[in-house]
Image (cartoon, rainbow, N blue to C red; front, side, top):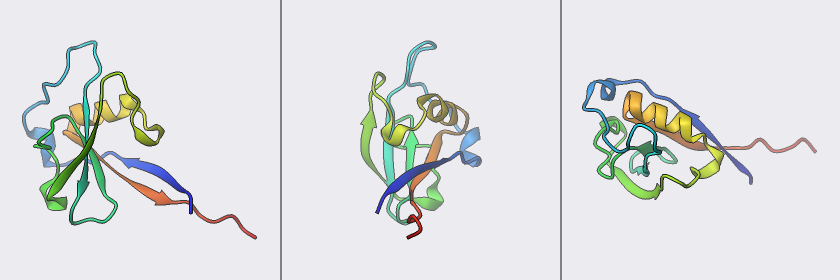
Length: 104
């Protein structure tokens, strides 16, 4: 079974919370990776280790890793898109999708 990654940008009440102060103007941020304990396969990127802006309706959330400022995000995701979503909304939700089997 091959899996591909798909990312969603979610707009919600988290957009009006405090801004993430995690990087300078011209530097990349450290991105934290979380998994939802209530939604199977649902994961998120956030700008702080506490995941303070993650949507509570999908929590609790467990931190599973981090992507350093000079490292590439997993699954060939765009760092610019992730950082943009974190700056605008406070997080970016994503899950791996099963790839359809090739016809026989």
